[in-house]
Length: 162
Image 1 (cartoon, one colour):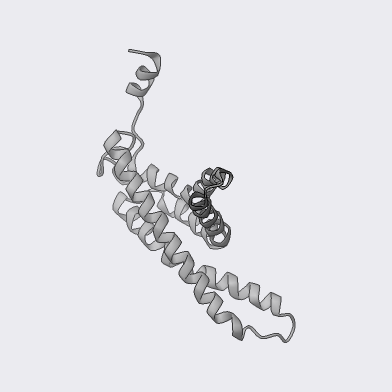
Image 2 (cartoon, rainbow, N blue to C red):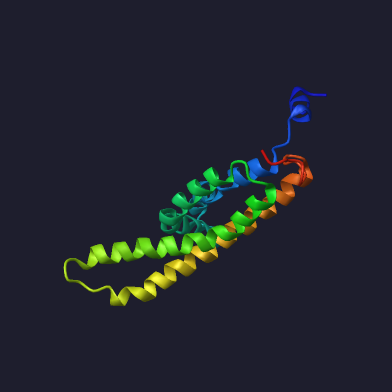
């Protein structure tokens, strides 16, 4: 057995709750990993990279506080509670995104300005965050399934509540 194979054989699987916390990095890491696709010159791959990067830039305002809250909240929670929280996260982000956009629109309007025209954009960004959020949630759970099959993440139910 080679040294690399020996190391892999001794590795310890990550617990599912730890994976859930780590999966919160996906919306920040995936756009960085996708950015070299912009250099390929292929239109389709470049478009995917642009969508991932722009989604990250737009959604970061609402995502970072939500992710920090979830990481803190998840400590000591059961696997089921964490899974539910991940499925609810995009819905938690949407109002936060709308509030951030409203504050931006109020600041841009200046003293005595109106934000009447901004309601449609606010709804767009709220919907955008929900769609992208659920895309990342689906990706996280798909990755979890693959990583469990390969032994990198421990099977469900192996962690007890702390």
